[in-house]
Length: 193
Image (cartoon, rainbow, N blue to C red; front, side, top):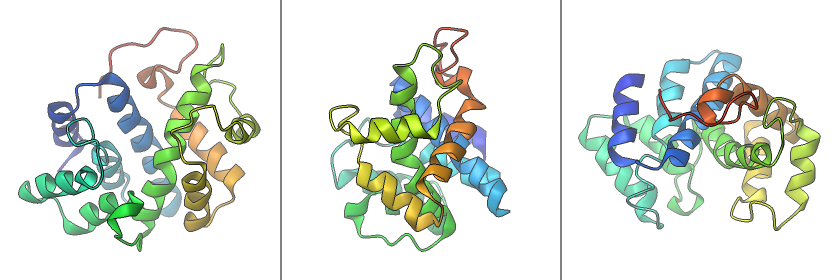
């Protein structure tokens, strides 16, 4: 499945613009990590786009991501990529035994948290730094649905320091700030691939 087909599938199942932006943010992080690790950034990007494609219609565990995996299987999506997506949800019990699976788990919660941190800043993501994200992580009331434990565990599993992971992810997301609605120079535009 190429990026265009992945985006089309995401849009078929996901109407919420914020969920689409989240998919783009995770895609950006995964593509950056793929390049860093010498992996196929197209494949990793597709996984980023599709990791939560079923969430809007199946938001409750264990339906998400299990139902989505069944849909992807019916479309011929490779098992190793489906396993990476299944592994991003702890409750599936699917081990994160590939670098892709670890990168997806590490990027998912953090991308959402970076977005939340950016939205409360006048310049959004443009000057956001890792230390500001770390400070916000200590405030349990801020973006309370984001698991700080998963963010920390993700960096650990990926084998990078938390500060390095945060800074790397901010930079990846900054590269598509306008698409994410995080560019201080403009208001959020409709989501497009």
